[in-house]
Image (cartoon, rainbow, N blue to C red):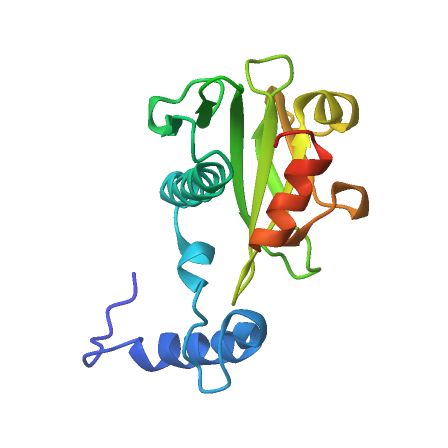
Length: 193
C-alpha cells in the first residue's frame, strides 16, 4: 500500500480547464459569442418532464388565443391535461363546432438541425400530434394527424420499450417557424378551422 503523504490536492484547475474547453466546443449553436446562453438554452438542459410541461403550456395557450379569435361567438375551452398523463395533452373544445385532442411533444434542435419527438404511441386516443421544436433563439412546429404518424412511425424509442416511437423531423412533416400565419395555414390544411 502506498504510504506517501500528499500535500493538499485540488482538482479544481483540472476540472475548470476541461469545462472551459468543452464550453468552447459546444458554444456555437446554443451560446452567444460572449459565452452567455441563448434565450432558449433552458430547454436544452431541462429534464424531459418540465420541458414537456412547458411545451404543453405553449401549445395550449396558442390554441386558446387562435380559436378564441376565430370563434368570438362560441365558447372556446382549452385544457392542458398533460399533467394527468392521459392519451393526449391538450383538448380544445369549441361549442357547436368540434373538439380536438392533441398530443404534444417537445424537442430541442440537434446538431443536424433536426428534431426528434419521442414517446408517440399508436392507436391511442388523440387526433393530432403537435411537435414543438425548440431552436436556440426561436420555436418551430409540425402538426400531423395520428393516422399519418401511425403509418409512418416505425422506430421504437429503444429495444426495451415497444409501442413508443420516435418521430424524427423530415421534409414531409412541414416543420415551420412558429408564427400565427403558419399555424393558421396549417390548421386550414387540416380542416381545423
